[in-house]
Length: 602
Image (tube, rainbow, N blue to C red; front, side, top):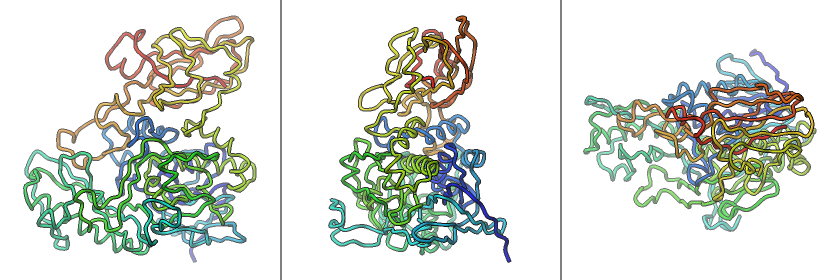
């Protein structure tokens, strides 16, 4: 008889991809006791070292829309500590963020196998941990399914959808005449690199043979086209994307090794010195079950940017619908894809993040309540990350008040939204509230006009900078009419969300290991945002008018920072001392630009 270990939690998260991680982290940071059950040995899902897909989101396609909150925290940490974008370091960073977060119990290598539900409410789930041969049972108040495949749906009877809807279902332009159960396929990534010597390649006997581009369905495979990757090694859309995964994986491996054989041995691809460095054995899955919530996001919502009173996240990735045929479809003219670019962020409502028929079930990831067409935009990991932070924050607030997710949406949505914005999440159409203590104080600065620091928008957006262009060694000061207790300081610094001033490959994990890069890129140390304030200090003034140092940070590498102070002060001042750019160029700090979006006291 195998042993069973029982865990009691406020919130149980199933699935440790980006959505599950951010759900768990945000819930834990807001005081909830969380158990995160992940069936793999590493975290990150499609972004992990097992699959190696980079994180894309709204900011990848639309200017000024890079995701912030936990997402920017993670990407900046990776850019700072992992300048060569090594996947081992990346996997360790993902592990660190969860494992050492207070209030989270992490169960790796543990697959959810069973669940118990009564009267439309989940009581507990059960998972098997392969490394210990233990059964783990988790009882919780709220369960958040971030498994991607929506494992809890068939176990607890939650409503879900599979496949492509008919036009008649939601009136979508891209809907079908007749609905079907086909999905987007799954892809198997491969990495290659250029060496300084010829490298031969002998494919395995079981690999497919593609002697011509036509045999390979004209898929793009220019080694020097850095905007291309092997996403088109994709199958499974015509099969059951859960039941048939092993069979699909086997076919993808035959294709992958056959593709490399084509590049190396059939025609001149400039690949003489290139070698195959890595082939994934775990396909990256795009689509399977999608839960049904109180609201189903549609193509119209994505394209028209429908405003919602319960907005908690946003997307901006294009409608990017991979047709089910995958690799077997000819790539000429993009015939294997259905695309439509977006120019604005679209809101995502809280009602799309909880089940319509299981009262304590939420979800975050590629399984939210969306039509197949809308899902083709929401499915990318940048969007999944902000959805995860929204789900975790909403779940923690629901637990705090003893509410179901639906009740929290009805009664506490303003608190959920305010908390997300306070945590540096962007919500289209909403402004963050300025702290009461800041409103009581008088704001002055030694250079320029710093009033934009208090406009409630902490990023460039819609043609407005929304920030303050100050100078290093010039202070920003809050003064009180009388000595006042100050709990802390909130800062939002410019981390170059558009990555315009970052040398090397700019995106956080984008192309983090060499795919199609020539050797000149192979040893690249990727850059870090040069505009970010690196060195700063915070001082407080006592009743006598004397200033003392409260905080000095000499090596900051984050955009969003809270500093607890717990002091009584007549004034508080923030002074930027240097940026990454000014230190690198050894400039006169007194004339260097310091750009930030928020400085408040609370």
